[in-house]
Length: 129
Image (cartoon, rainbow, N blue to C red; front, side, top):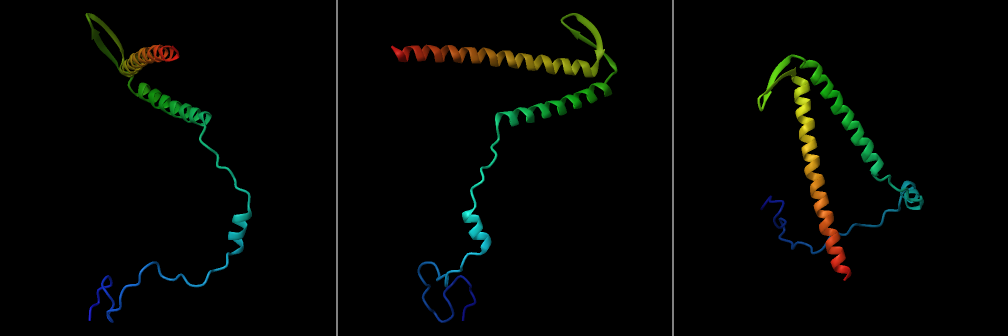
């Protein structure tokens, strides 16, 4: 006699085909009836304004962290670039480098947007002909 739960039963009865009989229907409860008859409530969707506020909050948190970083790195350090030498606090120098990197990225993105708009306008005019 086999005790394998996945194999045929001990009496070698064939496996039934299809889903098992669920039994008699169960009447719905009062809560289920109320759920069916209640008007549907629309979900609040994530909007652009909500995204803007999320970005503003994230920006302020990053700004606070940057201010703490600058306040803790006030030791003046010498910097040299193309023959120029100057002194400035380390935190300010790193913040300045990050701002310059962001501006370069924004300029590259703006140039790409202008390029794509020109191409789209050219294709649109060609399609109208």
